[in-house]
Length: 264
Image 1: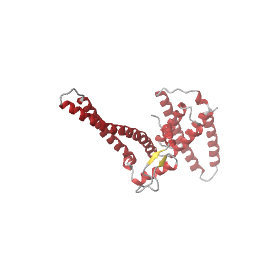
Image 2 (image 1 turned 135 degrees about the vertical axis):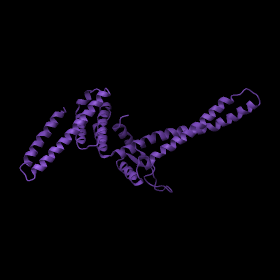
Image 3 (image 1 turned 90 degrees about the vertical axis):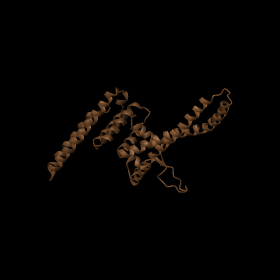
Image 4 (image 1 turned 60 degrees about the vertical axis):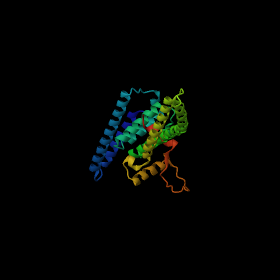
């Protein structure tokens, strides 16, 4: 069974042996002081992370369960702590916390897959994660909004025809449903205009200015995400006037990664 205290004791013993060796070598004092400084920094990061995790569990009323005693969770927890002490990034610490929490709550995720996500979360900087997150939003909302837009645009000519017929009846003084049909047509026309604006706003996700980046930095980050299988390039080499790395979408693996490392 995984015991955190055993790992800590082992590290302390190894550090003590190393300090003993260094004290007998030239320059050993400086190196020894450096090791002690780094140890204090790592210990502080460790303490802060454990406090953050504990506070989150308490505030959100998340209770420990039997899964926390498994070897898989122990291995993952150890891997997380190793990376926590190696970085000062509070954003990455939050990601590591969320990975642990998501692993606690999703028993279907295999430990090997969780380790892959952990490596990716450690490798990617904050901007790349934000870019990937918004590509996930784009994929979901762009499709939904375009389906709705298509339906409304199909409905509009039908409603226009009904308005014309109801207007003719109204002018003849025959009982009609002009007001209701005309209101439906106006609402549909308004909804179409609104959706077009929303779709245009979604398109901004594909632009570097959305992330306060220049074009080359944005391209660099997208290429990183592509190399890790999180984005895919929809450019076809024979597309006239097309360019690579422009029409990129999130992969299924990328969606799963984002869902796992970020809590909603």
